Image (tube, rainbow over all chains, first blue to last red):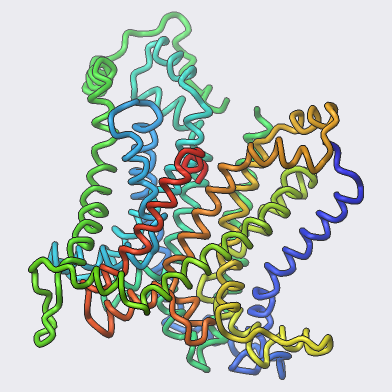
Length: 266
Length: 307
């Protein structure tokens, strides 16, 4: 199949249109963060830097970002450990019930968040009798983040095969040495990609969080939900969104570089 | 490989390994693969089993209990009342149909859009362009879900940018309602559909497409007979995301859906304002059944390995 010049051009134009549609709402958010209108009306009636100044002084917003970052880091670490363990178990062993286990891993993300949310809420409060806190959110987030790590690591393991590990074992290295010097370096970028997705998933999660967070726990999405419909706060939320998108370029770029470097190595 | 930094000073002969605890553990695990498996799987299985399966099972059981209308406490006696209410109530039937319809439409729209942009990314764009496009598609994921939904509320409002753009052409914004919900949900889940399809297309070797061309296959025929079957699992994988995420959503429909309700809203009001967890659990059975049916249906395509 060779694509004609015409179909390449058409595909290119379609791609540009799709990207425009993807960035239109984000562009509106960006412009609204400088607008004097509090109700986000278009075209913006005037230009102001008021919201940007206020956002960086808003203690509530900064606290919420810090809470979300801590939460996402802990949930990511837990899901990295659990996701890696279960990928090895499912990829390197054949055992009874393997399909069920792999279904179990994807279930928390395949079932709607509100179901996971009310199930965990009921579990923590009425079955375990523990008060909701930030730790209940960590447990909930780690549960549905396992799948992103699992997907990345198991795909990598499938591709790697076991030749290098067997060679290492033949040369006298034990299980731990082989993992440290052979397996782990080859998994690193898959772990990074999976961890990045887990972090993003946890950082932006609102529905499960609503049902598992204690009353004093304000993550960034909860802060945004509380402030979105307040005329004085909505533009500040726009500022936060713009900053997050800009900051996110860094980890995505690093992930791309790592993936690109590995592709060149092969 | 970077891991080549193994000790080099022992050229004259590798010393016998030290017989420490780690060595003994390593030898022990090497001889007992089942124990190795047990060691690997114990922690994740305990976590998922205790936290998730128990919680989910407890919720399902709750669907068969009832709430005492005087005290608001849950009465733990078996009853099918909630299930019957959900199965026969016209409200639940209408909302279920609406929710499934919205989820299906969102999925179809997302797959159609994703196929085109993913094809351009994987097969037309050069390596550098490809990297930029991946970043461009991924970046919106980091803008908060709520902010994006709210951005559409502002775009679609009566004094929003869409009205402003369309008025000169005699058009007008669809306003808030089901159309707005479908647009917003399609927008929100699009990156989740693009990524697996792009990854699937990237795995299709160009040589196969060229071979098809050499054998006389027209572009359209090649796409239909060679490319599509190869990326089918990836398409299904993407559709699981958009379908299940739409099925449980209640915030987007609150923000842009006007007075429309989806299944998520019914669950939400019964947990919160109505304080009727058993009924909420019974309603939750609907999306659970639909998702399980969908997963069972697509399981054979191998899509679950492509998530």
